[in-house]
Image 1 (cartoon, rainbow, N blue to C red):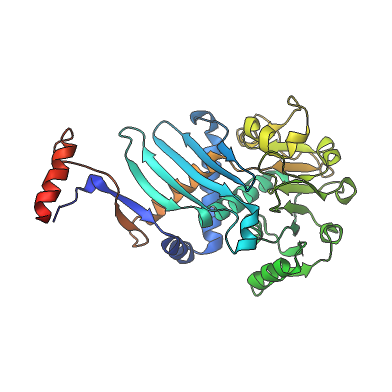
Image 2: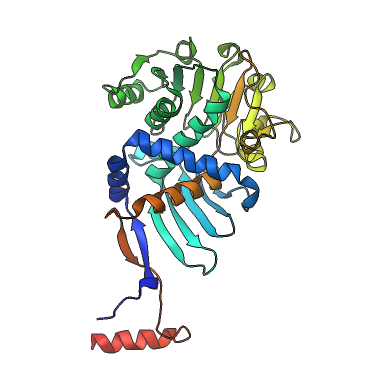
Length: 351
């Protein structure tokens, strides 16, 4: 039997172990700590390699790679978006990711990221809202009550103190699912019959729908002064949720403008329309919310640095736990140039 070198072993976090890790930490603590890692990396934004995600589009959906590096660590995520999957009993979004050492090129972590992406999306949304939402915000409308909705609600409670939820989905079963999952957790929850009803009295409006199309989830008359819009669902070319008139009267904040102009709500606007990258708010280069009456919009499509932060956080929290498997992923012969000799020796050991 071949003895494995420690260099050949890569920690692997399965879905089961990710759930165990999250539950051992606590969902809201996990979201809060993860938001801290994301904010830390946003504050050093210039240190990162940045590129729009590499996307392969088809009539059924999209498969994407999201890479970045800070010069010390390298991370990437594989992720898909297939809205039709729900009709087949499958997730519309699945993902996995890798964190690697830049110095050697060796992977340091392989992890599921379907669950982790939902957590990092909620954490990113709430992190931004701390500087963009109206002061004392307590009520959030969530339009689109699918897989992301509960994570958004819990992140906004953990980071902003949101207590009142107004839920709407075109599928009442999705709203009931969200209400049921969040019941008993201290929220006041109202299931609404329309998007118009959902936004009544809301300080924050989160749109997180799945259909891959130009849509008007929010029309201009639904958005009053002083509201913060957390637009999460528009995340690929040809898919939007907000009427263009809302954009024209909002202060717009994005993650990485070259990517958001391709995929986000601002694909509806001219290529030179002014927007603010959120890292500039954290660095003090640009203001966040400037007045109580201002309409702020976080046009969030998800960016690779957020996934990098999530992988970095998971790696740090794995220390001293059993929430991973040791995966024999790398060939590591005794003599680096003798890869074929390693194969021969393995054959001899079998005989």
